[in-house]
Image (cartoon, rainbow, N blue to C red; front, top):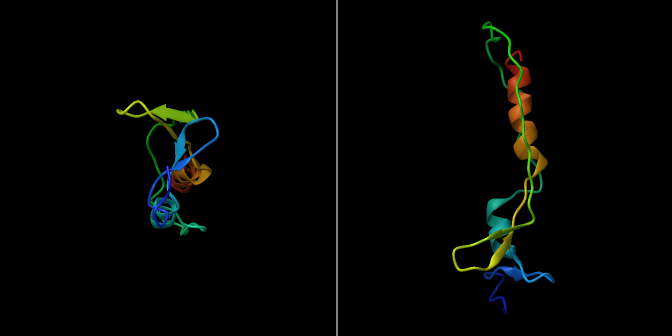
Length: 88
């Protein structure tokens, strides 16, 4: 599949596709904009927080083609940082 100005998903050697260069440029950033947040400390009963992170390289789309997917660490650690700042 030839990409027109980076608009088309990029084919990978295993036959799956990854996001186009344009999609990555529009939806991602080379740096994060995390800043220290201020929360009122949590005062309820303490419980544990379970974080399950799963990654599967390919996800089958409705058209039967496979698309590369994954989880960026910022997506997980931002949640954990907010929980920590809130007193967990």
